[in-house]
Length: 319
Ligand code: UDP
Ligand code: MG
Image 1: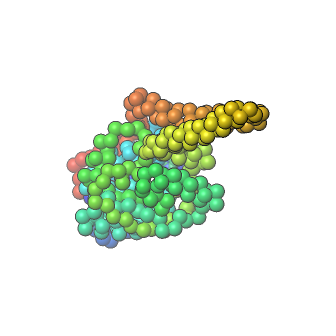
Image 2: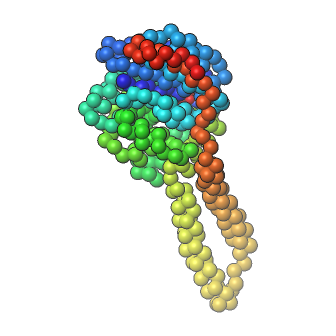
Image 3: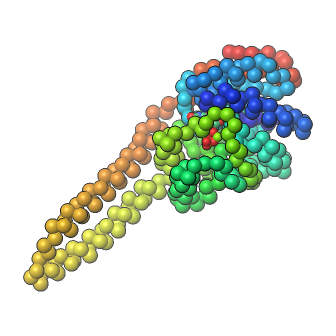
């Protein structure tokens, strides 16, 4: 069975459409599937729609998990994967920007023996310039520091059971799903897809949440920013030696520097560099603090499950 994890945040208009279009793609090929909707603290009626869907659908297993509040897409993916029961699991967006037809290509790759099949964006779809620029910068940073090409990567992936089991074992609170599947290793393949446009609703990312996501992802995946501090410190040290020698020579030859401007500039420059460095270190300390608290990634308030045709005996409707 193929499990498909769908993070849901205020997507009431997309839930049923997602099920229908996935079914229209998978049913003709005779691939049994399970949908795991993870309601990430939606403020609209999403979970009611999921509950209704789970009661009505009989040709697939529908599982709905509802978080007690918004925990973020990464937590939704993780919790969804830990509840998925299929031999192979896919993660895709609920807004159908990830085309369901691509699932077939991924499935074929999985049948060929690939354990991780990653969806790669052929085009990034419609995004505004600022967003595009920001995304480019963010992924350039990550690519540079990790050596993994990220700009076209997405959360649209298919993972073998083995991979899911390993992934779910990872104990860190802050996981960057996109990059971690490359950290895990395994035999992986890539499938290209075109990002579709959203039909209903709007993107759930605000500039603030994107910046938070970017900082969170960078600090959870690489310590390169801290090394940057060391490097800039060393550069300044070299600069200090040169300037120091210069001053001493000037002093020895009788004309001491009259450099008030230099002094002020150096003071300001070094001061701000130190503060930025402290800020960067602060992010990592915050990370450590969060990890050490060991809080759960998410709190599931409610689970609904449909009864699929072939396992009637597990008559579970709600608990
Ligand atoms: N999403 C989520 N929690 C959040 C934000 C988004 O579960 O806090 C889900 C959302 O419902 C969608 C997917 O993550 O299924 C991608 O979100 P969105 O389409 O807003 O992002 P974009 O496609 O613009 O990157
Ligand atoms: Mg989207």
